[in-house]
Length: 135
Length: 157
Length: 158
Image 1 (cartoon, rainbow over the protein chains, first blue to last red):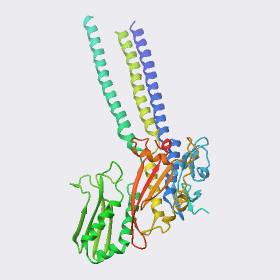
Image 2: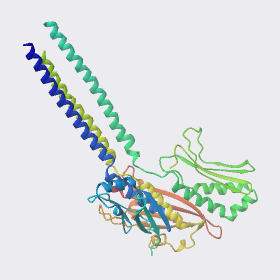
Image 3: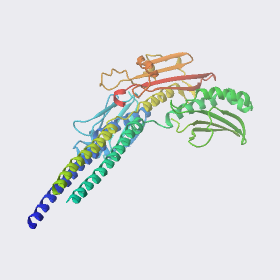
Image 4: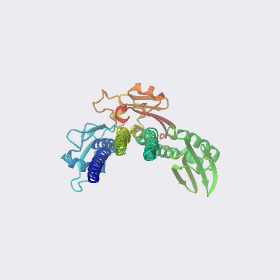
């Protein structure tokens, strides 16, 4: 009788506790993954850099070259297998920053200048923008 | 047996009370965090502003123009500080004020051989606490020092 | 006695997960609320626009000698501005408005409807930046140049 009682206590408590702890760990892990993915999200960086570059161009005058460190964005693009040389593109007076195939954020600038956006293949951490007069 | 039952109930009540207090604390902390996110951090955090660049450019252009005006230079040369002060007051009215929500205005002082000759104070803070002297532009004309500055309550923006 | 303990533990487990869900839900809400909002750069953009106009009208302390020939049609071209925007949210190149007043001569370019929104309050109202500039001409005549710059782009900044 005493042995039976001891066996029942051991089996019940251990299984329930393990399930409880595992569920907690899984839940907290999922939560942390979600939080970290939102804070380092590609879309946040796309918006940030598109606006930053557009404002830099607005403040610039020909003839100027502006170097911008985009290391964090380039790392994300590499993870997403997106070519670093195509992260920043310009169409007319609209700057588009893309870090993944189905992403992208555009922002226009009002400065009527010619802008060439180039990926720095030496440092591989920067983009440089050459501002010149429109022909 | 009866005593043991009573003991068991006391333990459960104790645990329940602990959870009630914990729940109240958790909900209070969550409430404060959500309030902070919504009303303190959110409205201002993502509004960006540049502290000095745009306003300083207009101020410097204006002051440069003012000091290029031969009439004003002549007043300085002749030490006609009364009329020079009148012209400065007109200039200060054109200089850009801080943004809406940020109190402040432009001030001017003129020193001749370190002696103050002109003082135009449109906005001076009573104490130095919270003061942030920004956009200070100093010019030297022979032995005369001209000091233009924007004084604001808090940060000039 | 064992039955009481089991029942109490199960209720507490459920309650524990309920609290976890509430806390997690609050954290998700706060993070989404903050990171879901865009950066609002309209005020900076309006300031840069004002600067660009000031650079066009006042050069090395002297007013642009061609200021008399400036008008609504040629202002953008003469001052190196382009108000075209991206084709999104039914924007039709109507996200900017500028008004320049030089000695009672008023030049306005862009979406005139935005001028009325200067009286609006709140985050959705586009920032209206009013600045003034002192300039002289070669004959030492004074000019007070008033510049009003408005940048809308609400959908991308609020």
